[in-house]
Length: 453
Image 1: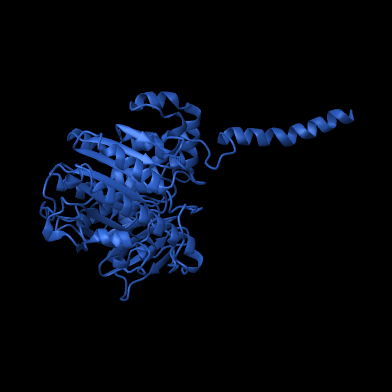
Image 2: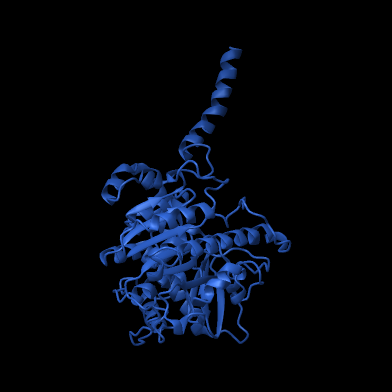
């Protein structure tokens, strides 16, 4: 009798724990998601490989707050549509062409968690990213760019899909939704580009792997795909090794090529194999030293690339996936917190534009239209993405918060939290109702697009 009692108690304690571990796929840092089953360049095969019950659970879990309605409806749809038309305006479809060719190779470096405060030219303290400062001399620095969200999976949809982030969820975790997004990679492949994607960590995070596979890269490499001899840290392969690996592979790609690399070393736990010379930064000292390391790696990467035959016909694009708290400890809902760097660099930049700044206000989801316009390729399918190098494009930036919106105009900005119905008015002059309605209409429209996709 006593033995049966102890067995029953043990069963009641151990079994739920084992079921929970099984549900998350093990005791690893990141629980499983659909990405575990994605293996093919054909999306129909990936969909067939995913457990239907799991997909149903994810869909329910991600949309509990908005099963039958958009929680961010602030006005009638007709009014929101009219405001959106006014926001984007009817500027002439013109482009300032800054490249010497319309078919360059393209190397896109997505910088994990890079805040504008890491960049001296964007108002940051000098000495954190000296290599980036050197690259600015040979490129065009976009100095009014903001991240639309605060997580990497949101940044991926913004960069490759031209789709802004939004509260509650991310479109990348729901395959039934992200397959309806346009794809920058697809646009380039239709134009004859060979494509590749490199990441030294685990793409399972935020279901990024399934989203990246949907985009149709010809080659995808994450941490487990690199040679076992390459040193790894706690989070994955350090940036110096992934950049070096990609640099050696680019010469074997068919031109024109589009290769993208997502850095990892500026994400905690910041265990990079490099000295940490910056002795200031207080609570963010580890972060800025990690940025110093990645910056060093970028400099080495470019120096090696300059010796390659493909270098002279290559455009390098550097942009962050999202920002990060910095040594200045901005309010998390402030625009300063969300500001990020974006740089076009390379010999294909016309001499007249090298070393210049372009201060058109925008987001990283504007990259798709801006880049495709330079290649004289169509980009209208990227509904929310504007061509920053169109001198007449509108001046605004948007970012989502946990339960609201940040809206930035040259004459002022605000953030609004729906849960508390509280406005953070950061303007120096009284905030006009038109500014409030613009931000609300934008969030309402983006979330409506997410729900209907």
